[in-house]
Length: 457
Image (cartoon, rainbow, N blue to C red; front, side):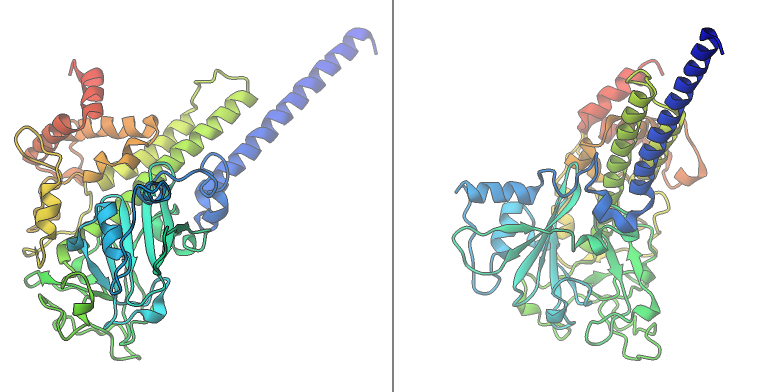
């Protein structure tokens, strides 16, 4: 074979080897990406990979920041003999006692101390959650990190000079990073058929509770205070028949405004487990998960794209059509939940038993006409203007721009009536107009995006 023939063969071999290398790199990167996205059951392992690094990345959530203030001597948590650090922690995290919810199903860390008479108390605001159990060894605390999603901690209930919130090493993610949380570190509200002890009859099934859940499937294993007319839920009662656990005395649990005689209510900070707070929690827990999922997916796509562009020697800003579709898919999922698509209708007025509704609605931010996304409806739906108030959260603001800008475009299309698809028919022309005006007045980066991209329309 001559020199020219040899050269041709070598070039072909080099081309083949380079092609094989590219294919191999692509397959490896794709496998990493698919392993991250498609196998949430193994989320504890996947979250520790690039680009998320869940366990190793420094936390920047409300609890982590509180610990930093404690370590610096700027905050000293007060301890009382009845509730331990609970009142002080709530104050430092900016959580109102009116958010108190009482869950008596044995579905959490300290299940041995939980029963209908000694329920676990939950308290929450937009970014933090605190769980307290009577005579519990620890408080269970979680907060949303803008980049990492839900971070879980425990705080020992014993007097010490410098209390320490201990970050979970992965045990919590067994439940809190599963299909119930969209496969990311997050939250869920569970409704069960509880035995008199509080132990769920798992054989009867359970329900995840969010804004799409019919009221009749909500709050099994929870105490519920407040009125709801002829509608019925699963709260306040237990399943007495072991052979027919799905049979509940729902009438006996309806429209309860006082928990005296149902639980040792005097042991808690308030006498309430407010139905309005429960409804808000149902929306918020899943919304947090949707935001985290969108963030993780977008960052995974970015990581994949960067690796592939380098391997294929493409421009660094090249984005494939498949990557765009992935961003659009996760953005649309977030967007629809944000606008309460498929929200379950209310058939009667909901009225809470505490000050939660008033406190929640007063938080704002408000537009120039005094309206806000926190205004409650509670007659036919949760919010007066169906758009999630978590659009203002640090976690939403930290979502990669590709997803965020997709959501902003879709908001324009729906709120300006360019998209009148049936799935958005729950939004009247008036709803769309007011939501648009509230967002324009209260979310500057969104207003700027709209002005930049749609000023001529």
